[in-house]
Length: 284
Image (cartoon, rainbow, N blue to C red; front, side, top):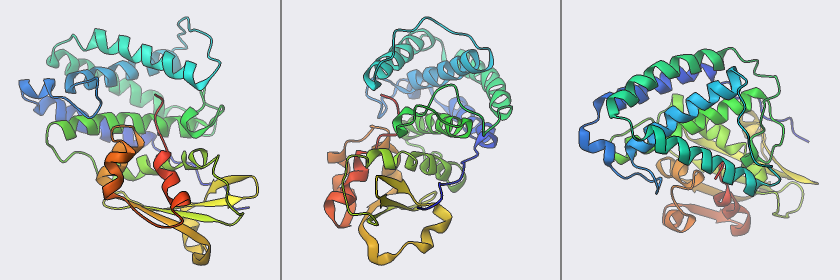
């Protein structure tokens, strides 16, 4: 059995990521705020409102211990419904604000958010598990990395909608992809294969790389990235190549598998290779 992958430490990246967000918001023309995005229900202004809302809720829930009444959460479906309702209410209220007010409030809020996230013990247990990775209990570092993926992919939706290159960079995109791939064993959980079977996933472009999933007797496991060179090539049953500018949309449900299909290459066992396309790295 291989060792588990190491922690992904990301708290130090939030100031840089949100500086790019504020740079974008301050550069938008009035018409840009109403542009549609790959998030079907939200335009650029509404995504900005969502990012502000989730930062405020993170501070309220995490830093301040504030709790609102919540319905019983008995299943993933209940969790999705609860989160979707919170998101919709936040966007309704904050999405009615002017772009200038949204920008000003975001600038103030993210400073407090960064201080709070930097204060956390990465190895402690998070208040809520990362459900899309199949975890009911998660370490704080994983929850914080998940928060980075949320802020990264919604911001990238804004850049993408306004025709800008965005934040597909080695420094900011690679940890997002590393975090996404922690959900790969959960995506493969129902796929049976002989022990020792290996699936190789390659994401191209800046921030990309290669990840390996290995079938152990009772589960699939993500091979430690630094040990990827030790993977026995003769056991690689399938290789899936995903363009980097497409991967973030595929794994956050902004692009369907059918839409992505023509741009993805799968060699070897198609059943094993195509399973990664079922991975979803968001709640919803």
